[in-house]
Length: 101
Image (cartoon, rainbow, N blue to C red):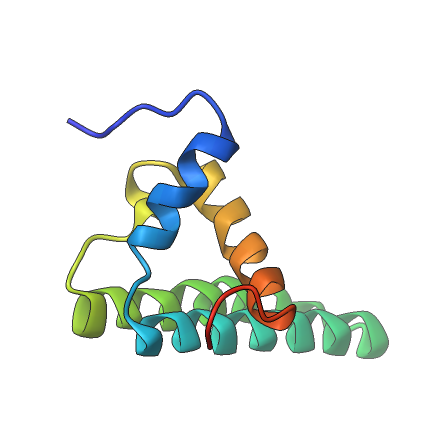
């Protein structure tokens, strides 16, 4: 049974533990960058079909990292909302140098 978390603050250390492999973290980061670039592209060009690519980039790169490098199941499967938040907090923390890239 999946562990229950009462807050994101309690979940985030677990989330980071699920991303200990640097290649997995890099794939998450790269996927998140592609999501942001795609969002900018969609907003500038009004090519709304690009929205379809955003989850493919975001989850696709992350899941490759989990299945092939981290060898665990993505937290998205058990904690989708906290996991989504964790992706962006980890992205920020990597940008700020709090987490090693």
